[in-house]
Length: 239
Image (cartoon, rainbow, N blue to C red):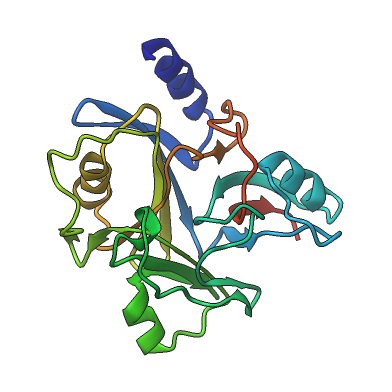
């Protein structure tokens, strides 16, 4: 694992948007984007109507549009058909309604939340608050659980939680700085939440997923990518 982390760290240094970071002895990759300058979007299906499934296919699809994919990450939980299980808004169109049902698994470890952005602004908010606020977001994806809520770690995430996995998530600062993080080694929910609260300074942060976590940010080696993905978030260069 130490060798993998060292290789990742050396590659990250070449990517301006991403950096390696250590928190409580655990290694992470952190990528920051400013919506004042960076082109961020959500992607699910390709031109043929089928789920894209991977950053590589997304990069190929965008290349036909004259755009270069410089960053991609899985963006919220999905079902066996690779469709979103919660709210999903792409280019102002609601493609899947919000999911407020109770159930099992991380998504239903309430409160879960919504990552939303568009027109130079972004945020992370508990699902119930987001729906009540009637925010008209150009892009939005629901996942869960929330990691940090108004500066406090999710009340059901315990410091002694035994589960450790590769994890990825997102937080927002100053209403426009979007910060993505993925662990370079298995970590607990609590350690991951502390990264966002204490090191990254995000008052609200959202868990995107666990074992399927994937990061694409050339020239660094891809992390994950061993499974087919549902919705993805990407940053592009080009018109």
